[in-house]
Image (cartoon, rainbow, N blue to C red; front, side, top):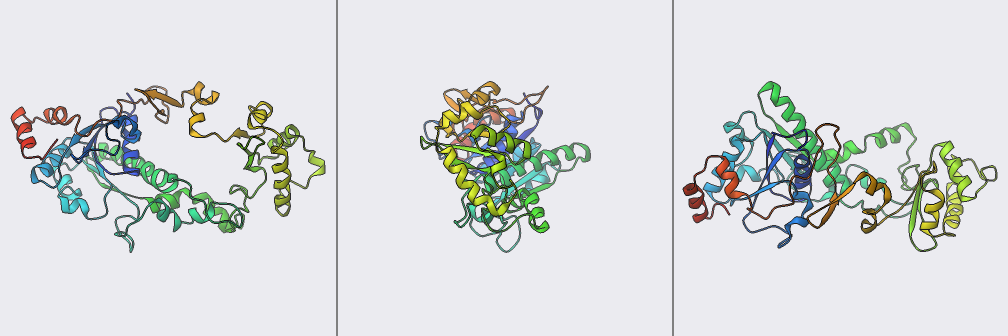
Length: 378
């Protein structure tokens, strides 16, 4: 059931990084209860496709009613942690902020997921992943030489710098609370997390190893041996052979003579070498290059769309993707030798577990019916 079995966490429904953190915690065995607005979720009649909400139980609560607020605080009393993803001050206005929640439950860990953080001049400004990674240097660093920055989906800010950092912070604080008996607030800001992800690049830049000119460095598509290339069937492959022995293997297998080429690390020759690589890789199909290079030390792989990634032999062998009730999805990570994580249940309908959860907290049938009549819950 996962290493977090026995831990109960309350998630105040949001979008993107918050649900991702909740998914990670649920995959690791925590009982994650998601408090959702009664109006319904974004996936309508097929909530199972809302993969970020897998493994969680759902309770429908109207936080604009006093009884709804009281219900959430009652839930918080029995939880190890709760988290929210609103702008600073919103949960305080609703009446479910850290102060009232931790007054009821002093051991409670209270996670806060925002883009800009709880303070600072931009704390109350609107924004999205692209904005948070732009002021940390991450967006500027991603892209090809002479071209505009490339948007890396919303992986860097929302999920890597946001949701993952929130989950890590909450687990750390829960662990500390087990010994101290005291909860605390975890301020997870995507701008902070994106900056942390750039730590090694900031070190390289200050050492003079990394140029701020996009697409001229070893890991940003500047190097011919660390880039993507088009094949003859208009597909793509990639290589990442920056160690000398792996680079030598790559040259041998694609038919280039190392002695006839400039030195691998002669950066002034990288553009010309990239043209050589481009021409070579264009001579065969993606699958033909797979037959030649797969499984070698050339650091090669095909660039697969999501629809093909499910079926790659390595992913199949490791069970990297799993099917649950008709939905293909990544398996829980990381893996554990003794208390392995698992998908506890598919994503639930809004309010699917309302009666079940409230009954566990000691609410009577009459109490539940009264809350429904007053439209405080669904």
